[in-house]
Image (cartoon, rainbow, N blue to C red; front, side):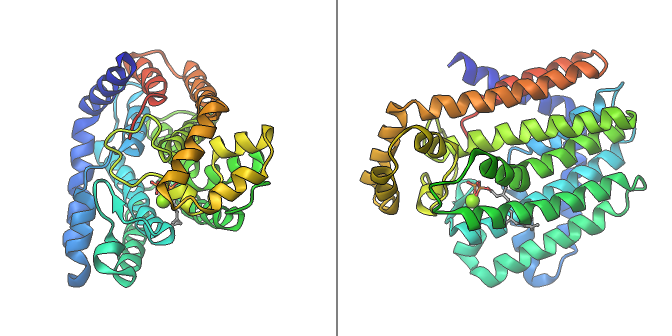
Length: 330
Ligand code: FPP
Ligand code: MG
């Protein structure tokens, strides 16, 4: 309870601090959406208006502010808008791939309007994200975003390749997570550091900070998919299990238990009773707690990197932001 309110307080404080930048980037996305082809416009507008957490933008803005305040609000807002559009595009496509009916508490785009519209809206948002970021003069920013776009696909395809494979290794899992989630957070953190005017060494350190934050973020996401500690998730539980994805809690189970019985249960995970039985077994084997500690260890690594940045209120807030992330419920 205490932790949960800490999470909300920290997010609230962080959002308040960067609100002008968040508002400007929202306006920029809205302008792009308004100018999109007529058939896509309403879907684009609806997508950007769904209340996401915008954690990627917040991380970018906090780092951009961490060296004496945001130097150029317009540049920072543009970089964040590009990140959010790429992220939203990837989620639209991900829902097609995962056959997920819900996103952010509403029907996913493909479940309301079909795959053709969903694929094209996602493609268009990806293209707009790249067009937008090309206006940035420091080439490292578009470069990092384009790298992230490529890694997202690599992570997603590796995940598909390894689905149903109960022999997946921890290294494989981390490779998936780095590709599909951490890559974009690396780009956010580096972009924030570049906009803050840090030297190349610190920019690289911030890339590592994004990497650890991203890994932790996805591990927590994977735990939430089991409904563990989840609240107002806005999407259905057990999608990973139903898609045959062996995420960290299951991987840890397979590392220390006989595999056959669990492998059979996974095959029937679309039955809610079976899914609940899997959760029970994972709980008993302490796999959720262990997965949480792995996430926490990455959050600590991200926080440790902050010691290399100048001490400030923003720096302390970033540290709290990382610590609180372990307690997120949606
Ligand atoms: C959500 O993960 C999915 C991602 C973080 C990345 C998805 C990437 C792609 C579909 C490929 C790249 C697309 C573009 C446009 C470059 P999840 O399924 O674990 O989380 P969820 O429970 O929120 O769906
Ligand atoms: Mg998904």
